[in-house]
Length: 465
Image (cartoon, rainbow, N blue to C red; front, side, top):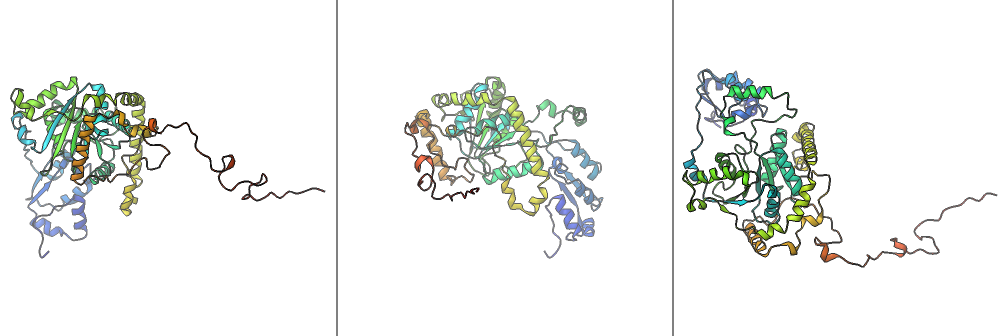
């Protein structure tokens, strides 16, 4: 460039590097810097930029106007505010009102719901994914970490790979998991939306900080309290959003389904609604209809899912219940601990190695099997006698649509590449005939002559006189 730039967009670490290498002269900053904007201020310290911000403060002139942008108020925001700002003024932007929700959701996003018992949610999501009734890639929202790992353990027994994105994981692991999902390494990402109710979010920051300090002694595991999957994360090419657990309020619902249908692309959302979630679902429908009472016209915003028939669901019930009963609380606890242990190991010990060898990051797979029992091959394929004809037609239509969008060939790897002597359906491959053995006596190789194998050298014997 001929002269210094008018606008610089960079991370705090990059600015510090440019100043140290004299790419950006400190004297030029002190003379010409007029406005400093720190976006996502609630995440800057958790990303490890504290020292970079402290070194940058010395180069900010007194007359410079500093602006902090943050979705939440936290102790980190208060710390940065004291570090950078002088006599700050807080401007709070309120959430959209209920009568404006219908304008927030784009018309390109189709919204569906399925009424089911809370104990049948695993069955219904198995039918949706295994029968391929929703477009890939899919983002699955749950409300707790245990539910997320239980869902992952359940799906992997049917050959459905997924990863669990939550605030318990190290930041490096979360970022790499997001990169893998955006790159298409796996099709299903389970996102933990453990956001608090509105009453807790609206509490004064001092009270929330006091409650947080008082609860540290009771919790051994550390969580990133400012990490959230509902907003602030760039999920790319998400075709379907599935609400395995319903959000706590209409605002959470809007932010969830906003992960799909972006940049004028099409998308869909499917919500599994249990009887205990009817109240919040009614609030969502009222908000989507512009704050009016529910009537026949409100169904144009969110309608029942038409592709999944009752027969298709019931055909998978026995398999789903059998696997669901095997996933105990102890199994979920062990899987959660193993995942955290492995991710911390990968994040800390291998950090320096991956900085020098970025291609080796492909070896870190977040969708690996967590359960001790390897998925059975007969569960990974649905036999023809269990497939409902109506649902099969809908599944083929979804596949054709996916091929039309250029998504026919998935980039992820297959679990069962090794060929076995059987196909997926044991009823079609059962045989009373035993397999032929190669060679006499069940041994491979040349035939024996005179009781001695011709390929085996004879032993030398020593005879004593």
